[in-house]
Amino acid sequence: HDVDIPTKKATFGMGCFWANDSLFGATLGVIRTRVGYSGGTTKNPIYRSIGDHTEVIELDYDPKTVTYDHLLEMFWANHEYGLTTKLKRQYQSMILYHDEEQRLAAESSYKKTQERVNEPLRTEIAPAGIFYPAEDYHQKYRLQGHKDLCKSLGLDSEKLQTSHVAARLNGYLVGMGGKAQFEKEVQSLGLTEEQAAYVRRELERNEGGGLSC
Ligand code: MHO
Image (tube, rainbow, N blue to C red; front, side, top):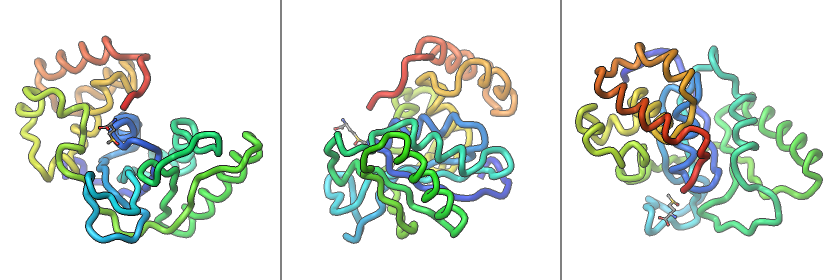
């Protein structure tokens, strides 16, 4: 691990996991991200044979910097969960909790959201079970579109799931997090001048553009 502080896990299904990887990767307090399949019962799912699993994102977050409640707010604000949209199981809205505290917070945020939107929600709340990491090419998907940058960062299969800087850049490159936050922490990311300039340019080009999949 390139950032070694105590973290907790959070797991969410919020549609296509590429977008959520970028959204949370640029969120302060999120240390590492990885995408995968969970929430089902079939063995060893892969992208082309996902079984009854769902695309989810797994976060390692620093609870001193970002609260689970804040992550839940981001969950509700950034995907489809109402009855009006018919979703495949692959894109099921889902909160997989890791302890009792997360379960209570998830259930209470669900109630609040239901009162606000005043329609039944499709969101499933369940204990986190086995998480199957997705194939390498799905990890930090937006970052991997920048081959030279990836090469210069020395990202291997393991680092695609454990690198803090990879999580951050995967967000910044598509405009998540924003320029002000990037400038505040760019020193601590350990980038070369050239890498920083490249990311800054992409960030400026994409900021405000929103997420797409
Ligand atoms: N539209 C994309 C979705 C990818 S996703 C990780 C595709 O069909 O490839 O579900």
